[in-house]
Length: 155
Image (cartoon, rainbow, N blue to C red; front, top):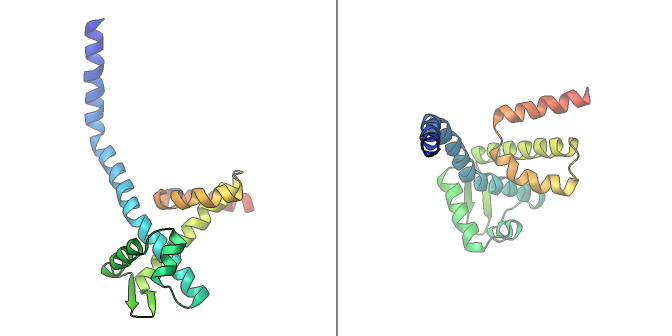
């Protein structure tokens, strides 16, 4: 018995070691998604504010996202450094072309995830809330499968 208990962890470690590249890739994808999730949320909100009010002020961004003004200011600075937004004194924040593309892509992913959740019976409020997290972590392959699933239901 003692010999068997020692053999199992060694075998498990060997299996884990063999899976390291796969795990590293998966965790890398998740870390990347976490990093871009905030930027996607900001660009999507800025796009919405611009469409509705003609401007996106830092104060409004902070309020809508439920963060402190300095947090919004810091993230807007990151958007600017990454070429996703510009800011004009006393005029607010504006998206660059790359920021507009990011916002549109995030919005489309969000809508698709919500539609799938609704299609499988998730209540609307929960679908919207859950999509806020899922949309950032779902792969393009899975999004394509979601789209095929929804098209199949509509046909």
